[in-house]
Image 1 (cartoon, one colour):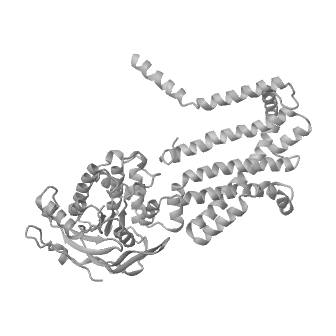
Image 2 (cartoon, one colour; image 1 turned 120 degrees about the vertical axis):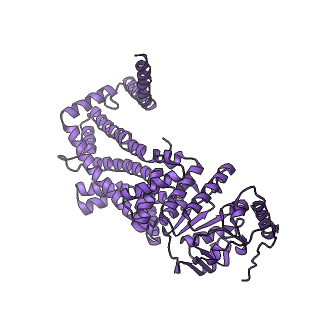
Image 3 (cartoon, chains in turn cyan, orange; image 1 turned 90 degrees about the horizontal axis):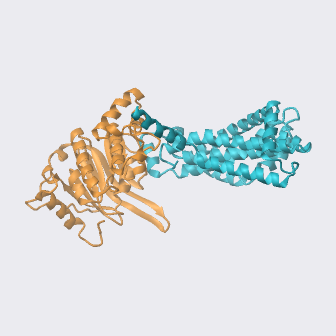
Length: 271
Length: 278
């Protein structure tokens, strides 16, 4: 009996200790700050309280509008993100294998990386018209260059000994890139993917603010834009809060778990 | 290029062992010169070096930093091309790296950090020998046991000590049963105590398997301990200065024969202060 009691208490404690207490405290602090300032300001048109925002969020979820808008946005976002990553993988693969590819990638990234994706929107509208393809085009642009830059930089930091060890086993070409360079550069690739995800979000919300896909099938940006036009400020903040919450969930669940089973386990990066 | 072959003449010193003279040459280095471009001009790292290596031999390339011994080993590994001369393995010119010449490097980062100890050895067997996972597994386990790491088969490299990492690299190299085992100062980054143990263990593995090995080092004691023959190099540019046979009797640490050969090599090749020995 005593043994069980002794062993179960530390188990509970270690389980609690695994909670991200620092993050939870900081989040709670930010929420308090928001609520306090909004109450002091007392102007729901400029800054609604956290309570009013959550209430607006809840009713928008119940009405089904917000989940719809979010889903639309996420679908466009994911398509652009995946296409961007695939093109980045192709370009960095070629860059790792040939001098021409490497020079081309360096030149292209230095040309296009500083170009804000949203600045390409007028061109995209000319080429693809108002609609999904234009949005995907600008997202691909916003994802492609930072991801390619991070992968390429990661490949170049792979130690020469590890490269030689890989070639010693007879690996070359695409197999060398996939089986040696990609896992060896994974810490940098992972931060590239995080960066690309953030850039994709920013670009998409900004693009949707400029024009909805169409009023019927607009995404989160459109939701924010229309509510602002109707002076439904709590709903505007509910839309922004959704963007933040999805960001937290993706970072906390997806990228952190990915890092845990890869670079942390391999000792390439501290937890 | 004329080279002086200094042979032991002292009666107390051993005479060449006969087996290395009768065996057929496995590796032939013919007038090999290797250089590379540096910031201030062309640097000759290896200058017209020739020697042969017979099956079953353990040849040590000995010399201070800058004598081109590691560069020469990289060229034999196929990682770089000589400016002139030929490197022939069983009569075939070496053009690229391959698993028939497994290299154990000095650096600890030669292991794949994303694979366990077992995964590293198994991966090399799968890629280098084209074995299936099932066929590779028992061979990998056997070699991990032979280097004494059975308890660490599922550990990731970053959790291992330097000596253990080098053991994994040695297991990986032996597991592929290369025609020629290349060792590029594998123990140079280890502490002195671990280094001595590793030398003994490597010697035991080599004698047990009869593998042909080419071993690069800057330690005379290490050269005498692990080699059957020693080629001494002098730097700037890297040239072959002398060759020494190491009979089995001189391979035992602490014996007069060991000390005598070590001292003899030091005096005849590296006593000149311009040569330096680090």
